[in-house]
Length: 119
Image (tube, rainbow, N blue to C red; front, top):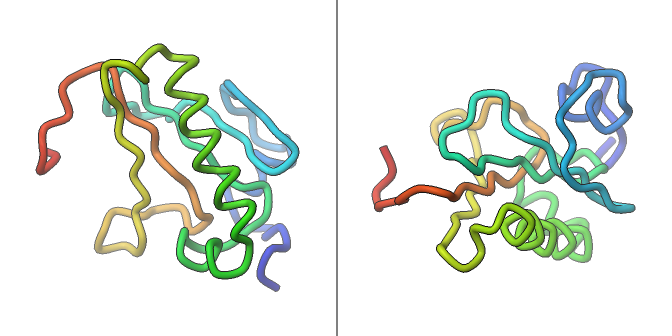
């Protein structure tokens, strides 16, 4: 059922505390933690505590939680002091876009030049 924790979801397990993560922020609706394979000096994932497979399904079902997630992305950038130099918020949707965990999440990247296109 959408929104409910999924037993086989890595991020649901991080939310429940059954898998450890380096949590940098937590709110009633979100958890932010450092990526285990960072692509920039600041690389933090911000996830909703509710389970939806991608950002679009989260936004359609839970617009307030989607807003919470984006607000927390900005707070992560401020905490890591990349808000004034620039940062990127990325949502990968589907395997072709590089999504490997099918629980909506935003990547907050900063602390180095982030030319476009990435790579």
